[in-house]
Amino acid sequence: MDLNQVTVSVTNIDKAIEFYEKLGLELIVKTEHYARFVAPGNEATFSIHQSVHFQTNDTVVYFETTDVDKTIAELKLKGVEIIQEPVLQTWLWYESYLNDPDGNKICIYFAGKNRLYPPWRIKKE
Image (cartoon, helix red, strand yellow):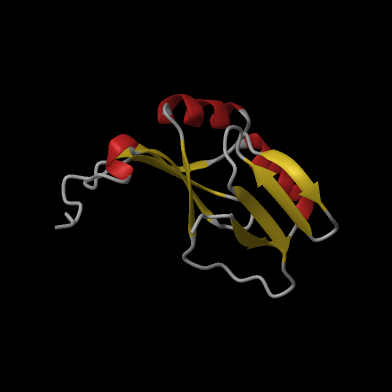
């Protein structure tokens, strides 16, 4: 099974499109209430859907980059508010957090080999 896409709800489709384009995502589909993006070099997609019954939740969308500090500096120059500066977490991921215009939490991170192979990974016998 392959991951195809993740979709999050937003209240303003145009404002959300502008935000996700600032993150570097390429808009590939746009309708009145829906938009889909691809991250350059990836096949999985990310989409947004305008929801009448929007409510915030605990969903976190993770975008990996090899240079978190550079990515966060570039986002700041574009006016994106960072809610947590980059920090090395105890689970060995270097992470920074921000919110999209609707409060959906976004994590910009680098995990490298620890994404799939952390030291505590369950070993198959």
